[in-house]
Image 1 (cartoon, rainbow, N blue to C red):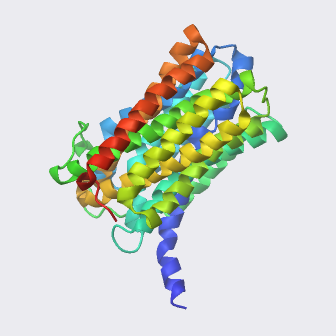
Image 2: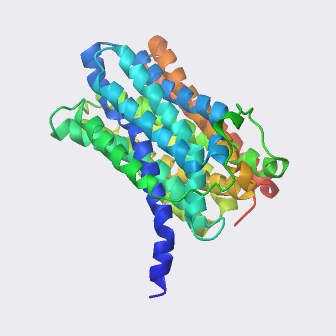
Length: 399
């Protein structure tokens, strides 16, 4: 019977994590559908990567302009606004009769994720019993990555095996968003001293002094991990279709989802490995994933794409959970959401720049060579990050 109160104590944390996952799933729903949009609207691979990157710019913009909003007005109002943007994004994709709808949908999706990343991460951890619980940080990061993985999985399966391939996934997501809003209204607010929205000011990237030593290596590792996801999600669906003749949308969705689910596995391992060792080991996993993806691009081998998703995703999970836990635990409570948002600014810079670079280069040298060039750049960054972390152990506290 002792376990029953504990489970009930964790239920709000898990419930908030489920809401977090629903929002993040909406941001990756279009991933396996871009080839269908290309057929319908007739645009190039460069346009695909630009549409994809618009999402990251929306996230970064919100994090900079209102990343600390939930510290002032409360977590729930910000999260409800994020669900509103998620619903509006789904409506744009349902109405996508021209390219402008896709840009609008991706931008609104980015605004939704920008509102959610810092606020939902802080909310999940604050709803957990105890303070700074490793399990709470796992719930937050697993909800984030699990939601991102469920998006392409759901859209790919529905597009392949159900009617209305460009519509049904967004209809399902609208229903889930409505349920999430109802659930969120039943959860308690965790910000006790709330201030008016007018007191929220755009924040410059900055950190309280006590967080900076922890933040530097955490941000570097997060950038490289999200950069791998940016390259992977931008290149793999088109590469599978053009070079491996994989036209099955479900297969494309499963492979992209596998990278995110492997990230959750990596996050789970942090508790056993320890935060200090997880950061450099995660960089090693990222390097292996990049090497396998380069091999897949060069030799046109589907098994290498799958292995790249598994090892690269696992490496990203190790680095991301360790980084997030260290940064959140080192942050003052009244600045936690703002500091976490700053970490995500760094991460989403990583996920956007490689995508744009691949698109621009693919026009001149082709998709395969563009992917190889940016994989080489990210691999160099991963090596630099790993060396930095190994040589600066004092900057990465262990668990």
